[in-house]
Length: 213
Image (cartoon, rainbow, N blue to C red; front, top):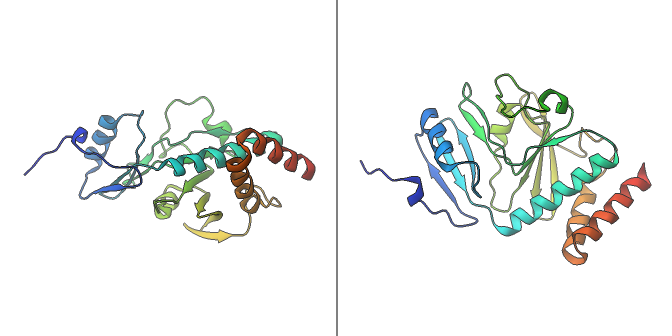
């Protein structure tokens, strides 16, 4: 048997590495060796481990969409907590995932101030965001962990899914923000940021929100 160290593996941006027959103990050890300060993302599903390195375009879209959604929540004066690409895992289900971004909104108070989360006792994020430039989304893992709402950036659009009967159903608007056409509007301001700059796009977006309040 050939044994390799993780430092010997190099995953180019936009590519992914699949490791089969990885036990939960090995998965935990790999997470520890990779550490928290890294650019790669992981997903684990019953023995299959994926390690992916995002592209700059992916990270830019993730940051812009996240900032716009944060601004939206601020304008509506809704408390929230973002945990970025925190590793969410459940040993009982043999599943783990690192979203591009995630939000605690309805359950913000339940996790406020916590330094560690355990999904066997703590609630999952209320909303997870994935940017699908490299087709990485794992809806079955998010569904198993009980994440109520999943946003996918696919091409120039945002698709919103609601968890119903343990599977995701695509919906026309966010169940968290009924009456707000965010899936249509946010991509417009993401594109605006590319042309006019982030700050100008954020100001324009906040003005749009205030006009609708």
